[in-house]
View (cartoon, each protein chain N blue to C red):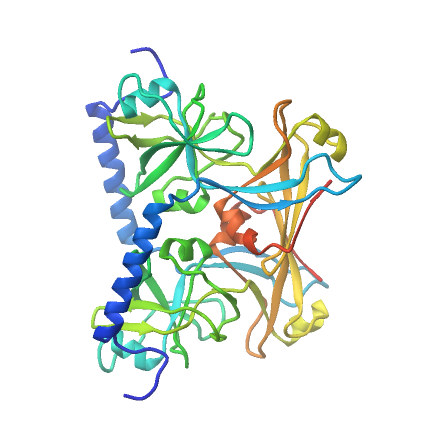
Length: 239
Length: 239
């Protein structure tokens, strides 16, 4: 056979492949994938912003009410902490569920972020929505008017969420000092410029104020992959 | 039970679910999903650019050599046309393959775009790369130095691509008149501004000149989903 860009597998290559797969599997068991990984932090400087610019990619996740948690995980179930998130009191729980969409496809291992909320909500990327067969509306957390639902499977039961499946509108959490520094108000938009090989500028980054939070940008996995946040050489929040 | 955001499924709802799934399945058999869907076209005006601004999202796809095509589909195999693409002579073929990555996961139904090339290449999104377990390098088509490979399964055989799995660097195809209108040269960068609910500006859009093409932007599915191209209210190519 002539030398070509591709060829059939021989025994040695198959062995190599199996070895790699096993190594990967064992490694992935040891360290569960983070739910909301902190991808990029820009340090503050003297006279600069009150908080460093932290940009986090929100992987798909759910929030649940106590009633739904018990329906999924059994009577008396509680969320148990896997790890703390950046904002105080927020955490990735150990509880995972499976989502079922109208295309007869499922997304397993969707992590619940705690603490429990007064609404049940699934935040997915458009890539996930297309895969499941859901036309996701762009929403700020908690706004469920006209949103689709889906079936959620837990180890002790299933729920039929009538609504609450959304793509989270990209946003930046700010506290008092951040509002003052950037000269914006709750509900305004800022721009986030990412430099790098996949450089782009998010022209609409919704400002969400809460007195107990500090500066943190949330984008979803489609947005994080579009700009390849990991390879960013510079990040800037612009009015 | 009190009224809550979620509840268990009853028999009627299960029947409804099954009906919806069957309807979807039958519908999806009738119309195969497009491989490279033309999402947005901005018409030319008098005194405007020589060609309308066409932005297309490239779904994951492959190009193959004749040797690899025959390894996958049998001796004498040829690519057969499913539909024409925007650039003359380019087409989505009816041939589909399955990719296998190092995480023991597969992506089925990856379409081959014709005609056959002098290299074998898979163009995936970072979302696909993460799913498969491949750290995709950002490349212009045909540049395979230091790129990973993967296993490709066809109905008549498998190949082990030693390299050629990439994320395609976002780019704009231009002909002579487009170069002149935008005042750029091959290899330069333009910006693409997308207005809309998920508005953003792609700051790096590589200019790729060929005398036989006309203006067409290619972005991948992560990028198309990040800006929600379907909901774009305005598109602009900026120097």
